[in-house]
Length: 341
Image (cartoon, rainbow, N blue to C red):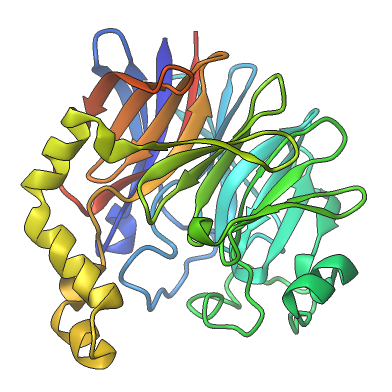
């Protein structure tokens, strides 16, 4: 099995903010890698944590590997030789990508939108959750002030998360003709055509990644609580798989226990302002930040964490099958994941 994964490097200079890596899973040998930079246009990034840095969601189509950057989808060949940049005026802080037949849903997180494009980057559809009457009623949302006919690729850098009504739409997945969208801010999954809130779980706030299985089981990364949640097609929780239940994962956390404790204080400690100031350095890059999710088959999945590592888990038996550590630097976080036989 060949695994492709992307990384984001917290606090790194933007030109060194991450890469895409090709890995032989059986031998754990890196076969190729390429840097992911934000060019054409360049972006002035005030956020030292992540924001414009590194690679995001990954898809494979024929002999091409597509990886999202902040405002573009970059196309490589299977050996990670760059081919072309695919961009769109509504790409702003892309997170995950998902197929819709031969078209791509790109989650444009800074502007709270899902943009469906063809393989040239031409817009063929879009969904604006803050303009959706079902979600406006459920979450008291107001539309984003945006001129959709303008180039918005750099207009919202650093302000998306702080905007009123921001939903942080960061992942999508196919579900027949009704794609699923993940709203990080509310821990909610929304099914489109027509709009239906499938589930809302407060413990999922801050979540990343959603995948569907053949029986329509949904898997979601609970990033904050370091667990994988498994739901049925109707949004009922079937099981919760805590990553700290695996000894090898606990060892990673133990190596970074001080950073983990300081990061927690920086995020949740009281008094808040003092703790945020004292522990800001550790808050930037938390160990066991959970991001990246890819089903291999009916029972096996790949999951990414920081410091940069990929886990192979059997979610049915709840066993850790294998692990690959790319980096022991907690600033290095896996983001996108996919594999080919």
